[in-house]
Image (cartoon, rainbow, N blue to C red):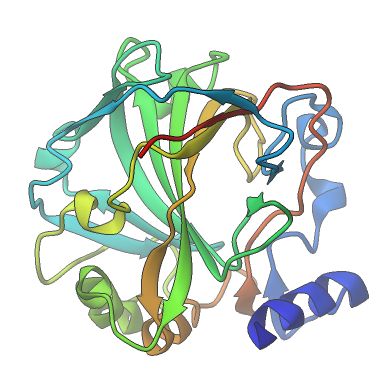
Length: 268
């Protein structure tokens, strides 16, 4: 709770400086779509205002299998990708998705970008996929529904989360090394990062939350939170951006809904 209040104070007082890095400290330099787009992300997900619906099941292909993976510091966060031989091994379909989407990367934002009923969480994981028919993220970004992102909100726990351990061990190797991939010492399974209840989620049409803010994303944010240990959390966010500033926060401010429909699916 104290940590989230600190993040809000940084926003309010605009404390980003030559020492403290924030992803929003140069918003004026972001592309025009980021400023004038009508389906921008993130947004507040309000259960009372969302359109209720009965959930359809997602189909997670190979999410539970372990694959070799790389970690890198993108300059504005921590990014996990599979090694080249496993690049198209994992996919997602079903539920609200119009076709099958291929997994591209997993990355993290601290604190969360989306809020639920106005509440922020310490961390948000984004599982980014591109439409199989598009063939790549670059092509998917050119289509209104070319990208599918699963959002998982995380709470802090006194217990460590085993899923994060190989990531935590690799982080000292990328703290200040921008875009230099390092292979994790153990294969990972994406299912280990996803909450057990996949039948309760918000869904809406939005955008990337970083430049160029392409309005190409179908967003699903699960309501059940995952966990990360306090110590793991502090290590995860101890990285530097491409300006050699400690990246204290890398979440984009909430965006206007602009008349969009947000759906809320829940069951069991």
